[in-house]
Amino acid sequence: MEQTLINYISNSASDPSIKSIANKVIAEQRISVDETIELYEKAELGLLAELSTLVCTRKNGKNVYFNKNFHIEPTNICVFNCKFCSYRRQASDPLSWVMSVDDIAEAAKKYIGKDVSEVHITGGVHPDWDLDYYCLIIQTIKKVLPNIHVKAYSAVELEYCIRKAKLPYREGIRRLKACGLGSIPGGGAEILNPEVREKICPDKASAQAWLEIHEAAHAEGLFSNATMLYGHVESYRHRAEHMDAIRSLQDRSHGFNCFIPLKFRSGDNALSYLGEVNLTEDLRNFAISRIFFDNIEHIKAYWPMLGRENTQLALAFGVDDIDGTIDDTTKIYSMAGAEDKKPRMTVDMLTGIIRSAGRIPFERDSLYRPIREY
Image (tube, rainbow, N blue to C red; front, side, top):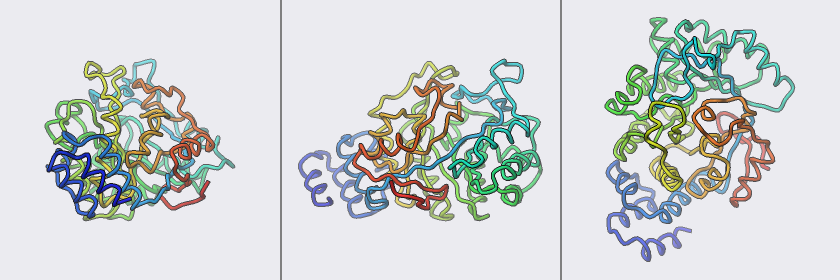
């Protein structure tokens, strides 16, 4: 495969700087922020597919991972008002909701005896909720489903409730872990640049706070994911520097399981006028993410965001994870205009997507330990 790629570069990559970067990737050398920007600006899509597939194959062979999961979104009422968000509602809005503890217990009870391994909990940052209540949500679910892995609370939710409790981040996370928190999702990263955040989410957790919370979680023995919301007001440099901040933290803490590029969806939000980037840009972004992260094992295409057919295409651009069954339990992307208004996939559907791309389906747990090959 490597010799074929070397030949491909010799025959098709006309730009000397792109050839140099490609040869670094083949030699398993880390690329810089400036080189990443060059890939965004100059590299042909075919070359990016080849390079990202090489990196992905080195790390994961032909395996593509998924899990059996469901979401609980306790509220869409939020103290913050991010311009890219189509999910947030004020309490007076008829489309707002707040789940009580009993509601959360009932949602969990639907999965008693069912073959699921993970519950993903995230939502709006409710002004009245504190750290104790976030602990109670986890405890409630663990009483109903004692063996479920709880992946819960974005860094934005954590920053708010831990700050409200006047505790250091590690102490707040330690309390949640004692209640059953198993890992942390990657949401809220958006773009880790102060100027961009001032334009799209000026009032919520800073870039530094996001990084510090994930570092604190890693120090407490919890793994987490990392995301990047792309395709709005950011530049290629913003994307490259965002990834560099995450890669640098991973060098220190080794706590990120996967990186998840999330496409900005323009439905019903204050940035709708921007429209959306095209599929080619999505695929470039996945490929460059895979090439860039030499120290994160997995790149995820979140299928409710990307759509099913495009998720399959992403498997040729460095992606080795497509999330899970979900069972129509999340509204974050459907409210923003994603194609799947009721996001749900069976195992047969997930494995079919993977096999059709010439890859091997693997069910995993939340920490990427393999459960079963299909």
